[in-house]
Length: 346
Image 1: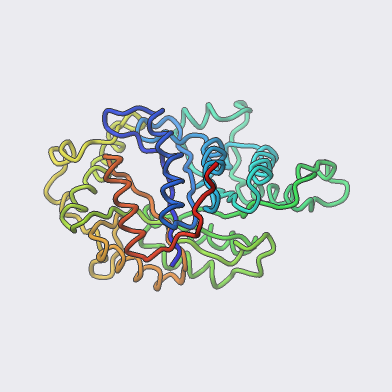
Image 2: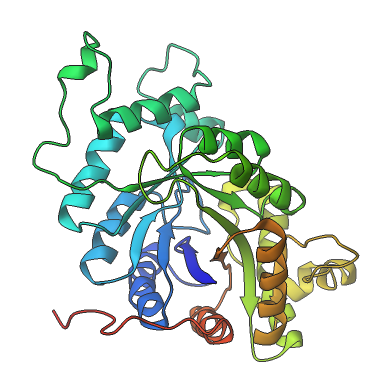
């Protein structure tokens, strides 16, 4: 099983965003040394708890300080942007680091004010045309606009021989089918919709056609939230910070900050603290937490059920040291083997 990471640039309690961003870049080097297959950077706007608002910047920095690991976006929120600009940006990243760039595309709201601020045209209601936007990105990569199309004269690929891998990120069967029909890889957000993961990924696998847009075409990734510690009890305790953060976000919105474990312990009810973090009566949890053996067993069950060969982990752990330890324990538990050498000395 391949193991990958989605990095949020989590802002530690008492920390700041510059520290979180530097930690997110450093995470790529750690992940590469541990044998992770890829690291993706998220896009969150107006969030006190996460600093990663421009994944393309973190991708560039991380790619230049590593030599093997794939680096990409998880995801660029395409509903806010010009497909041409996204295509140009990721072709430039590919030119700088050939063969290691992933363009993960998704759509999401950043909240009504942030959504409005991100729009260039504020006089026209936004359109729900995500699939058309994705097709336009692919047409820029392939130069496949029909003759006479105004965009056919554009050539953002000039002098760039390779292309980024393109993935669709989603949490529904609809997005899975769209990815399959377009010949793209698909990453399912199991931490958003754990109950739909099996159906969504199996649907993608059943309908995926030959990979017209590169080696990602027929592949699926299961993305989960996971916390690993030396014992089940310690992992459950560390996981309280994420549980409490979700509750804070529901109450106060983007201003919510990641709580320490002690703060979370005071804020959560006994039922919230004891919520299942393993598969229980066939129901998948939103958050997996446990010892290396426990989490490995959960991920192996999930991978078998969904037919994937790659799992991507999101982790919201308040203490950066505990977060790094969690990632190391998981890599060891899944017996991920780093390539040699992991990175150049430059």
